[in-house]
Length: 298
Image (cartoon, rainbow, N blue to C red; front, side, top):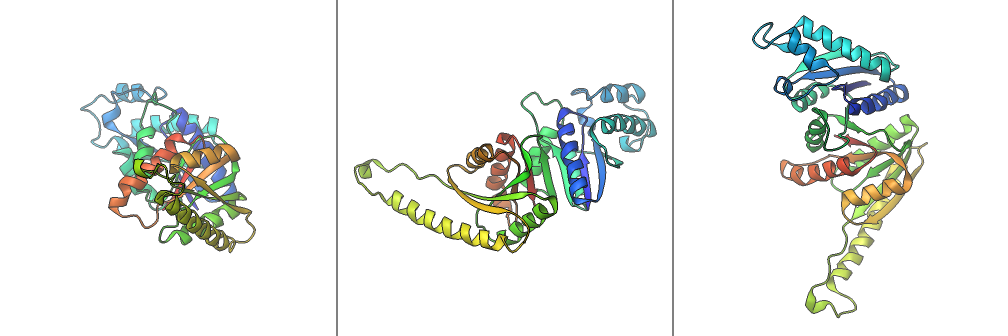
């Protein structure tokens, strides 16, 4: 099991470190702490004094062409990461320094890993890269991507399902991970809310909209029961199925608040480029709204 932890030494990185450490302890494997140098952000702010130090140690125009190959810069970053790890990690790790646009470099590097852990933005005042990086990674993750927030019960998982093609494999993979982690699983489907009836049908006791919603609910309940039965093929995991009505991101958020779950698992299986615009937005909507960690399963 290879786990990559992306850090920018911000408070969000601390949350990601806690989640990554829990993965290592529960699932085993190795941990790599990855820092991405983004030269375009050098004059945009300061992270733990790191950027000021780099600027004074190596003024623009001098030193190696590649920042990640400069021994002074690498030594300074490794020192800051060591200080960060002393506060937030108690498991062995190796340090990796990359250079370029964070989301692209992380996607490329993490493609050979089992998990990529990044911090989610805490709000509009996020000072550096991980907020926008998490948003871009949510659209098309190249590996299992865990966007971390330190809240909720880590032993209660919500696995969101929409009955799309190929979802069965995703559910089984989520169940196997939950078993290794020792977590309980809530299979959740949020079906769309009914549209309000048109004016000329408002006086009717049964509208075409309500009829279609009944058919949709019946179909959803049948598919959810089928998904639950398939999930039980992975023995030794407590699993329940739940049906909610509403907008997907809000419905998942409400369910998480009701259960106190610490992880929401979303599948990105079988998506086309066209679907990314919608499904990536749903994933990012969940990430922004959710107080708990999100695991995007490739």
